Image (cartoon, rainbow, N blue to C red; front, side):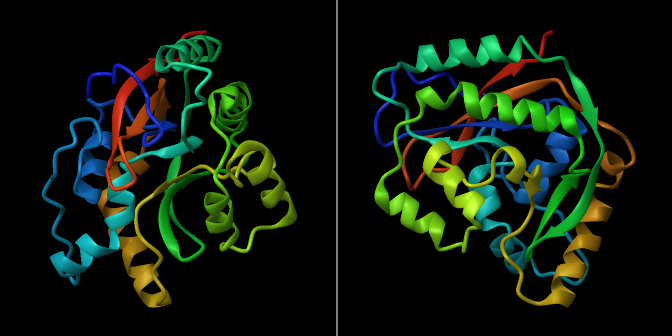
Length: 239
């Protein structure tokens, strides 16, 4: 992983994600699917999928590749100027020490019109972890710019999601949280969606056949609006 930045600035965004352990098979297969390893920042050759051109596969994974293989727990935010990056890391470390490791089972599914690795939405341990991080790290989040709010509202948010956006900086928290590890862009054609579900199910078959361990949470940074997200530190769940 990358060295922690010495200081934060307004062009940076930080995010708290679930990302598999770097030495795990899921990290390897997820990074290969997207074509980039978020812990090293290096590009990776994507798998060959029968019936899909390499150019289409590269384009349909463009945005997920930029964010890295992950599930969002605390969505990207600019750091409040009242705090330093060291302050943020200290709080993440404190919170991670309050949670026990646990396991989840994943399945490739459609979420709207894109494809993702998802889990049973009733997995309360993951729900609790995400909610704890959203609430207890929010003091470190700088307020959203109006253009960020306007951009989010283009997604036709529900009343609950809009309230979350204004209060927590992200629509999909607490009762509106849904764990997912994004694998594709939006795919308009239903038959193409089904094809990619089957392709992803085959690619991740080993990981779908066994429980995924949640042993840590990860801090990611985006150095500028044009930059890819990089995983810079993992914090072990220790309780």
